[in-house]
Image 1 (cartoon, rainbow, N blue to C red):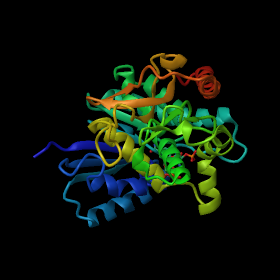
Image 2 (cartoon, rainbow, N blue to C red; image 1 turned 180 degrees about the horizontal axis):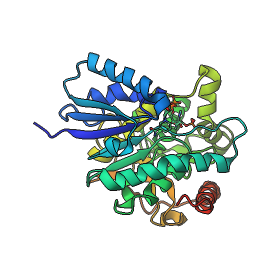
Image 3 (cartoon, rainbow, N blue to C red; image 1 turned 45 degrees about the vertical axis):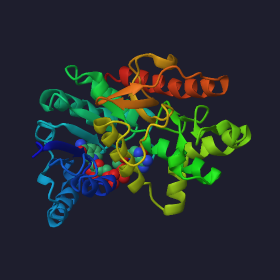
Image 4 (cartoon, protein in one colour; image 1 turned 135 degrees about the vertical axis):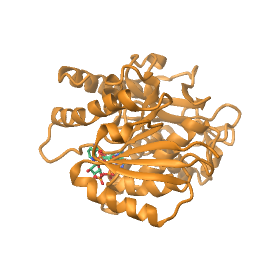
Length: 336
Ligand code: NDP
């Protein structure tokens, strides 16, 4: 039998946690043959909700679920962890300035990075979901000097999936016929969903849509989809955020070709993830920024050699400028 894999989830008592945990425990994260040790981290105010979810997990009698621990202790939560899903974060409260938000999250993600550095398994993979996700990942990585920085990522897969879904609906095609979509930059309203390399069954998307639709509808709608969900549903996106988290980690571990949507159509397909930049596409090295990526042998590789038109360049640069500002702000606060 396969060795159990230790999965740590922070914010385990929250909504995204609730949408994630049952999928993880049923085998949708790591496959139907991999037993799972779950570690659920919460802050004291969320511990009861996490404990209640742990009872429900037990009541599902999942054959793969080796053990479940609920804890408020960082060292316990990350001891031996292979997969870390950092969902819990401090949301922006009324009257909170950006500096306050970065400061509040610095005190969450700094110590988590240090605990990962201290106790996690050698093959640890980390994805940050809690916002501001890119900069939270930067902070965590900065506190884990012994962990290769390519093990720290932030989630832009939800933005990627939103782009695919909206494009498929507009073109009246199944999502599976689309490839080559990219989210660049920050997981924020400045993100740039790029279809200039995308195809529908081999036809360039740019032959199928006009620039006015891209500029005035598609790009802002992807970037503001979170607010649209809140307006329509009366609450933020939860199941789709959990789904994207599963997609991101499953393909990171298993390769971009694993799972329902990852077939690599003639080398044009990839997905999007925020990874530590190596300087590709003019994004300053060290920033956690979203790129077109493929997972090869368990590592995210940035897809190279895409031509970037002026239309895309200015939008990528604008989102990267925001990431630079956030990095400079957390540096000034002494958080990295
Ligand atoms: P959710 O589970 O709904 O969301 C968790 C985080 O995910 C939020 O910061 C949210 O950011 C972020 N997020 C990222 N992308 C999305 C998206 N597309 N849609 C929605 N959210 C997204 O929040 P809850 O308040 O229900 O739960 C958070 C839990 O985390 C609480 O139980 C709290 O106690 C816990 N917590 C745990 C910590 C820890 O384990 N150390 C630290 C801090 C909190 P945004 O608000 O910007 O949408």
